[in-house]
Length: 88
Image (cartoon, rainbow, N blue to C red):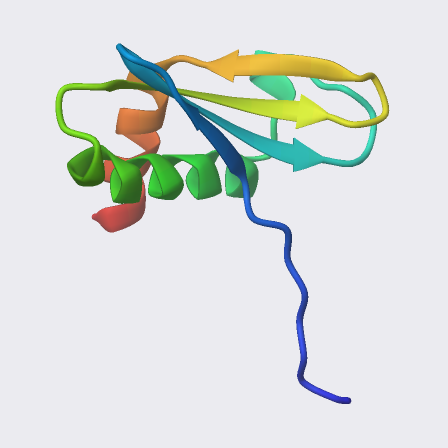
């Protein structure tokens, strides 16, 4: 079938005080400063969508590199900045 794309949605866990959001990525593990901008934009948008659905909960977003495995937590301020630039 042409024109069909598949994607994997991120997973999240709802805790009493926060929501953990994780997106799985393949490839070599990368540090904070090496994460491609499209991945960060994607996380920032997921976080923006979930924020009004879970008022009062901090949303902790991370990328899990499957070949590590390695988890990198992205600072909320960085995601706010990226979202702002994306929507500008």
